[in-house]
Image 1 (spheres, helix red, strand yellow):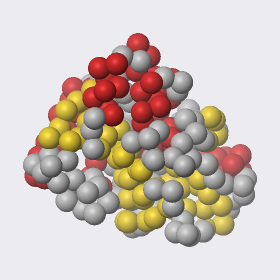
Image 2: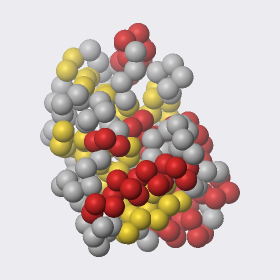
Image 3: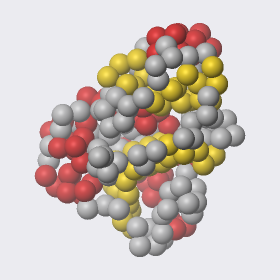
Amino acid sequence: MSLLSVAFVGSLDALDPLSGATGVTASTRVCVLATAAAFQGPRESIDQVRDLLAVSGASVVGVDGIDRASANDASVVRTVTSADLVVLVDGAVLHARSVWRDTALGDALATSRLIAVGSVGSVLGETMIDPRGGAPTTGLGCFGGVVVSIPAGTDQTVRTRHLLGDQVIFIQLGPRSVVTYDDQWGVNVSDDLVVTRGDEAVSLSK
């Protein structure tokens, strides 16, 4: 049984450091992993999360982990595995997959307590969404039966649903959405969450 535990948040705006979904306290050791950082540089991404978590008093360290060499570096992996919580910053999901898959860092993430921000949560599933056109592709395989993504244009969303068919549940995280996975799925904030199987809306909660 996987030890993976994830809070999927639609954006940093949805990351409430004092909420039950994240469970960050003054004693929490947080590692911010900036592999996917693309919208801004890794350092800036790490600092943004550190500033956000400052209210909780948590201890925060940052790791770039931006290539496969660093993803197999013992010190990088040790920093991740020694943390109570790892925050995966939003950004380039295909780059994140290429760095994490079949590496020591990827193995560490598969048994960690994570917060996945925005689109990067897609990478963790058995199936992920290629943002270049919305087609399903292979992810890290940490869970199956559910595909996580963020909203895309109408045409791309229709294409993605058609390609996924009705064999899996498709989650689209809006900017305020918070969804959790710990062997079972749960919904913490559903304001702008869309969950479908094929063309039908479904409930994510078991």
